[in-house]
Length: 114
Length: 115
Image: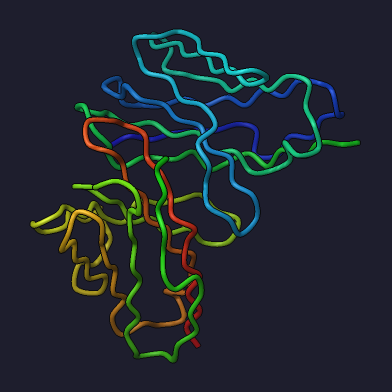
């Protein structure tokens, strides 16, 4: 099955700086890679996703890059703000055209220092 | 939108009892729903895939006789934790996706505490 590794486990950055979280996956068949943000005690919220036919996707301060050859993908958050503090999870799955069970990374606790 | 609800939000029960958790897609139909479990400060682990009108598919290591899943309609899946024990205490979260799309929307989760 799929295995997703995520680094770092904790990331502390100054407000206004950029944050980068990296994930690698094992199954070359995986073709859908979402990123979720989870605040303490709450549900995971989808913040951005990318499909394997695209190398990069951007949505305002958030971007995701995908390297299929190396089987890794990264989340980039620019101009970080205090409200960005949360746990971020990457995930990977092979999708045949619909939703499929996700394999998650272990999460990154992002701390934005004021 | 794509709203998923869960009920109850938290439950405390005695060891040996059974607990039912409901997951509903409020504004869309979901032929497939997913159940995840999240222990404190850990990641989400897929437990099973719930298919409307057919048997659920369980991940390796998840006991199907202990975690009963029923997906009786296109908007409702239930997870019953049978004969719960303290080690079953966890955050149980469901998700659902719209037909033909990969995006999954998560419910708010149910915090189960077994005494």
